Each structure stands twice: as C-alpha cells, then as structure tokens.
Image 1 (tube, rainbow, N blue to C red):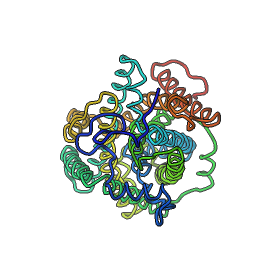
Image 2 (cartoon, helix red, strand yellow):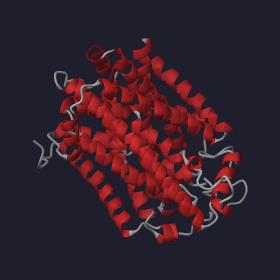
Image 3 (cartoon, rainbow, N blue to C red):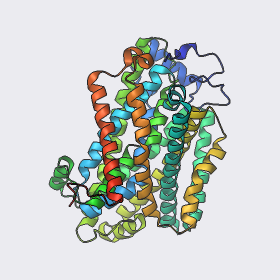
Image 4 (tube, helix red, strand yellow):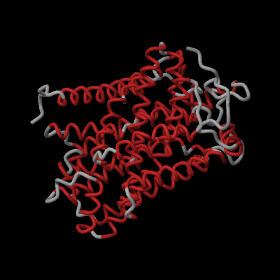
Length: 452
C-alpha cells in the first residue's frame, strides 16, 4: 500500500486525504509548526528544542490515568494488597510499546491508524472494527463522566446526574481551546496530568506503605482467584486504552510535516523519548494508586470497592489532606480524560468512515450511555470496572492493526518494525488476547487451570 509523503499533501487536504473542514484534530498553530520545521532543518535556535515536540504522548497519557484506573486500582489494592502491582507494571510496559508504534505510524505515513483500516481492510471487516471501536469509545466516556461526576458529587454534594452535566459543560469548554491551535489544549491537559501526579505524591507521603512488599508485588506474577483475574483484565483495559492507540497516530500524523526520511527519523526519536517519559509518569501514578489503596485499605478495610466509599474511608484513616488530594486528582482525571476521549472518538469516526461531525454532536452521542447508566440506578463504581473490561475486550482491534501495519514495508518503508520490536508487539497482543479468552472462560463457568 503506497502512502503519500506528508509534504506533498495538497493545500486544504488532511494528511489522510480528506478535505479539510475547519481545524483537524491535532492541528497546530502555524507558529508552532514553523518552530518544529526550524528544528528539523537545523536552523539556529531550532535543533534540540525537545519541548517543541512534546504534546502527543502527554495528551494520550491521560487515558492511562482516567477514572477507570481509580476504580480498578482501588479494588486491586484493597482486596489483594500489593499482589497485583505486577499487572500494572506489565500493562504499562505494553502501553509504552504500542503508543510508540502508534506514534511512529502517524509520523512515517502521514495517516492515522483508523485511516489505515479504512484503506486496507475489506468493507465488512472495516465496519466491524469501527463498531467495536465505537463501543470502546462509549465505554471510555462512561468511565470518564462517572469519575468526574463522582468527584463533583463528593466535593459539593450535588446529585450525580448534575455532576455529569457540569462535567460535560467543562469538557466542551476545554475542547474549544482547539480553535486556538492544538498547543493550548495540550498545555491544559499537561497541567491536569501534573496535578494528578502531584496529588498521588502527596498520597504516598501520607500512606503507611510497606515498600518491601510493594517491590515484591511488582515482580511476582500471581492471580489468586477468578475475581483477581477480572480485576487484572480491568487493569489492562484501563491502562492500555483502545482510543489512545488510535488517537496517538492522529496527533503525530501531520506534526512537523516531515519531508525526508531524516526528518521522520528525528521525529520518531523525539516521539519515543516523549512516550517513555509520559507513560512512565502514567505508570507511576497507577502504581501509586494501587499502593495507596493497599496501604490504606487492605488491612481491615479490604471490602472497599467503590470510589465514594474509598474517599469516605480514606479521610478518617489518613486525614483530610489525603481525602482532598484524592478528590482533586479524580476531578482532574475525569475532565481531562473526557476531553481526550472526545478527540479520539472524533478521530476514529473520521478515520474509519471519512465522516466528520461537530464536536458537540460527537460529545452528546458518546456520553449518552453514561447518563442512561446513572438514570437506571447502576452502581457507578461497578459500571466503571465493567467499562474497563469492555475496553480490554476491544483492545485487539487497534493492537492487531498496529502489529500488522507497522511491520509492512509497503506501509512503513525503512521504518518497518525490526524482528525484536515485532516479537515484542506480537507477545503484547497475544498476552491481551490470552487474558481476554481466560476472562470469557471464567465468566461462562469454564474451569481455568491455575485459578484457586
């Protein structure tokens, strides 16, 4: 499959070939694009300015710290102590690899992952993949809106439904920053990422952590029972996010407008550095969530499983500072991940179908299931955990797509995956597929060897 050089895309066209109508998702201001171009060309003051290239991985990383992570990590720590930390570490390493592959696909080809599906997959398979991805987008929105609403409800006492409405309004207001170019939106999301990280640094400073047991949990793989398996798959679904894999390729597909393989190589190098830093921070936050829950709840409060219950238990156990940090991080997570989820959903629909709809319509369509869940009285935290399992079941679509597309020389040219990278990618995809199969077997009562 031939891929157009991003530099030769006609004026008024998106890198994937669609006519531009308004600002495409991930578009940057002319000033920022010119500064990146200066850096690629080695002009004075340009080369080495790493911060110019920071943004896509930071934006995608918020998907790894969304409210679904809070739900699964609290349950993991409260019920199993430090025993499932290894799952968080493994999921984060897998996420690093696949986010790097997604970014590389966009940089090298000038097209995002959904556009590659549209071009390479037969119509029936393409629409099936799109349908699965849309279900994943709705599951993502469910987690994000519920998280933001729970945080507002606990902070202000407002009803959950009202909190969701406020979250929706704030989310849309932040999305409007994109009209000024994507950089202001990236900065806003980066500030929220930093806020979440700072809050969990405070939590760890307060919580009575057994660091020796935590270190052991990071390197000792063990699934004690079927419930642990469900939570482990939920952690995978909450950490390696389908919409983030689609989004990252879109955020990098036109960035810097590379003209030569040398440009692309430099962009990939900067991208890989950013992925490591951004996903390392996200991984540390997830590890901190489990450690905090284990330290605070496992001995004496292992039944804690809901976010509001965790907050109300955390405050008397560790003090008001711990409770406040928990709520602030939850609010920042819910709002910022909702913004990123909307961008990803728009990119998925546009890439698979060529349709572009207004952000407000997209926002309303994907958040509707969250309102329905609250209206019919489903337990919010239970819904959060199940949404992460849905995401894990949807993961094979983008993961397999990345494994296939990034290995093809017809797509990637000299940037096709080498043997080691391809082996790691296949292993990561096989791990997720295997966990999903085991989860389905356990759900239908099929005996699973190794589960106690």
